[in-house]
Amino acid sequence: MKITGSAKGAAIRHVNQIASKQYKKASERAIRRGDVSPSGSVVVHLSESLRDLGWARGVVESEPDVRQEQVKAIKDRIEEKTYKVDHEKTAEKMANAFIGEMSFYQAEERLSPRE
Image (cartoon, rainbow, N blue to C red; front, side):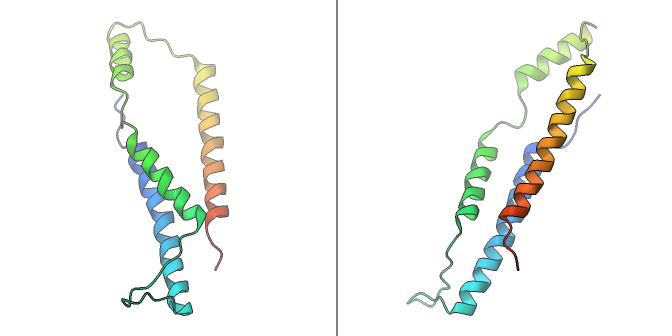
């Protein structure tokens, strides 16, 4: 079995999308209010949730994409035909991942400013 794609990359893209939307809305509000610096630049005040998204992006980016030691250990056990799948544990992890993903999207909805 070959696993492709990157959960890390997907997480970073998702955080960037949310941050971009929030920054754009903050910029539009600043322009409407006339928040302009002496140099003529628009002054944008970032919300705490947007700053938190920046922190989250940093955490995700600092993590390695793949845990090489674990991947090698599993590949070795598969080749040796000693790799056993714990079906109950796998199902539990899948359910927890789904619940975590749903929580993530619910949190995103709470963080997204309303128009």
